[in-house]
Length: 290
Image 1: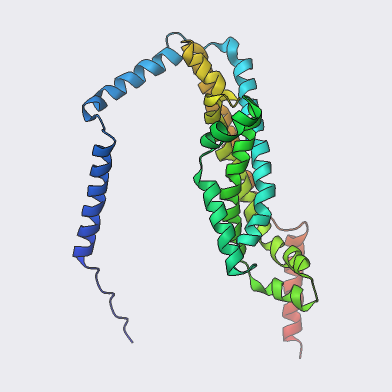
Image 2 (image 1 turned 120 degrees about the vertical axis):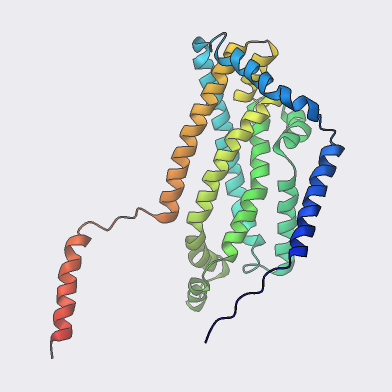
């Protein structure tokens, strides 16, 4: 039996879709009043700015301890905000999963997570938390934590919806209560991926904390803005170097840790290589025995 060749998609549909995309891009460009004639000046402006930061004058290396301290404050803000988002998003993820709760409850929780995720961290910090608690690291941490709830809750719900129903049915058949079923039938399946999502969100929150510092929420962003305001480009260059190096190191370590969590160690137990040939020989002898 020969397989039939799939029908080639109509070219008209592709051309219509391409035309619509071009029209949308053109409409957006004209709506935001893009100055096309100023684009050729962009490379020269970037060269001048980076030249002031890194070439003439050179970065102020004596400012390294203060820049590193501001970067550590941003990391602390991101870490505490990630913990807030992780702790509060996990139960919301269970309530948002359609295979765990009713469709009504799941839809309500999903819409709540969408609303939380739709509001940027900087808007939450400026409108809500800075007027409440003042400037500094505290409002930045709260803003990052609230915004993380929406993203982590949605990702957790999607992971929970993709579980294997076998362990859940086994826990239910053993007489487990609803909480026990979730604890032993669902959580062990989804926890590695959810923890990996937490680590990935931590990387994102480090960048968000640097941006929040520009509006007075502490961290390395505040140090960078102050350096630029006072035309201390040498200090700004030092801050940029610290941000790039620390971010690369954290991304590398977090990526390695996420792979270890999801894929496991990848090694055989101690002594397994020695025992496997002996076990194979024993099985072969048992098969040949009459």
